[in-house]
Length: 219
Image (cartoon, rainbow, N blue to C red; front, top):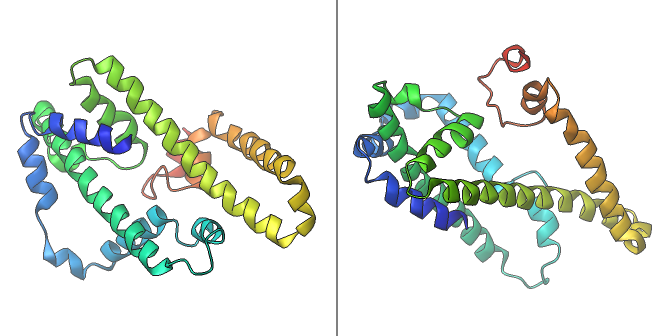
């Protein structure tokens, strides 16, 4: 579903005025930035986060493989799909950023935002340009919901599998233990819908982005 939605948005995005300027900006390379350590830090952070390295999810899932499973092949396929998806989605994002830059007559770097602004501002405005935008809006946010649930399931599975493997008595009560983890996670996540939700999100994850002042988030 994400690939279908991204493809539709790309086909629409490249037909908009200013889209080519956005794509050119996306593909242009400033090799001098390679000397900036912060660029490498950001890149390493992004790839580790998107692949889930260190979160335990990959280890938990791989523990269900056969002992003779070709893990090298799986690692190459997973990392390749991850990188290609990011590269593909970049065309979608920057085609609409170029369009919005021309539409609002502002510089491209002023339009581009990270964190929630990309998902809840850039993409919705992009969808609004599509014929039957209401239908596509519903499809887009269903996609976000399913992706969020999928990511949450992976994270919880790493916790559940690790604890069940450590404490053997939980094997007999896996369903109840899973229910306990889900309910506990739900209750904790309620902090993210309080008046201080932005600060909570900033603390528990990279959703807000590191460049956002937590005090301003709270405001």
